[in-house]
Image (tube, rainbow, N blue to C red; front, side):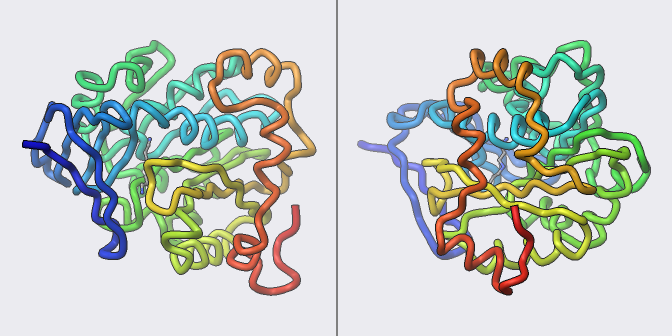
Length: 286
Ligand code: SPD
């Protein structure tokens, strides 16, 4: 008998994957945690029934959330990842030679342990000596660390369940305060195909807090909607005016998605995405 796993996304979409084996199921203090091996996308992590990552396409998401902001900062030494318990974003952050300290603040320690066990190609750098793991609520952690981090990456779940408070004006205000002088934040900001209403809401909140906000896109096949967005937010630094070219040249040799040509295109938005993010003619420009 065939076994299939289905993601039901915000009661709007169902996407299914043929399962070759079920590797893990548990209910943590925060959510259901599942890892299954699938025929199409390899091992996949589900939280509360929603796809968080897959072995087949995780590199696209993790390279995009990490390298676009990291390369725009002149010297990112202290980096914070909120969420991202699978370790993929930390793995990419550690490729930057300037990084001295990479803090992972993940609310659910069970996600970290399960990913170390079943998704080692993604979580394999979590034991690096530069990594500090804080198993606690990212919203509380950020409020206690003003003027601390050069780059902050919000690798959250969708804005439901434990991740909901990572999409609020209060949280973004604390993130801005936690950045150092030239600080940059990037967050995952949902799919303009699957949930355009959420993209609009997140973008308005970000613009109400950060001096500079610019969304960028790539396709993540395992996420509902396919086309995904992240938002580059800063105190003023712009992403394409400050690319660290020597670091980018070395970095792209280690990447499966990122290269310097891609970097120049990710801020080029299709018209339907522009309409979502810049509903007023005087919206934030690139
Ligand atoms: N709809 C899924 C959105 C999940 C974004 N974060 C995934 C975590 C990968 N490190």
